[in-house]
Length: 174
Image (cartoon, rainbow, N blue to C red; front, side, top):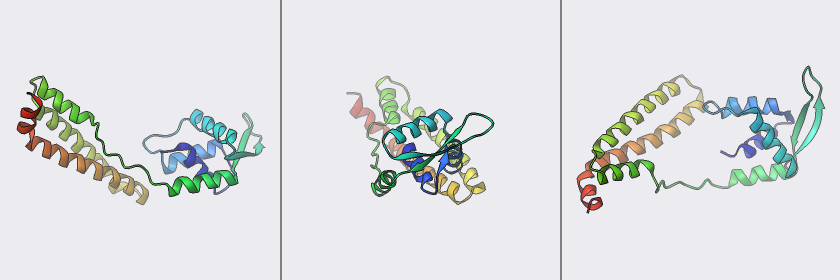
């Protein structure tokens, strides 16, 4: 995810300071990976330098002064361009799991064990996501569905590969 574009999108509702942006980001997008404050301020500095945000005042507080940031017209244009650009579909052609299966076959180890171990890990994660989905709001349900669909595709691949292990072994171990 582009943190810069996400912060710009959050600024479209109005000026905010870094602390508010971090909190808004974490509430909407950072359940599993909240932003570090340093990441927020480094990103805001870059956006400011690139003319995508501007300072919109300073608030005095108990601690250091807090700068408020506002999105510029160039920032709005940048967000619009980012939103209208499709994400590149990732075909996963250089897959670590495939490498492990092939290396297990090449070394005389049981590649079926590699697949079984991975299947078990996937199922544990899928159960956790299913529980999270059941307890979550709509946004969390959609995020969990996305992850679950990818894991289901992985499980299909694991089953297909397990069914083809003998054939793969003859092709790999020549």
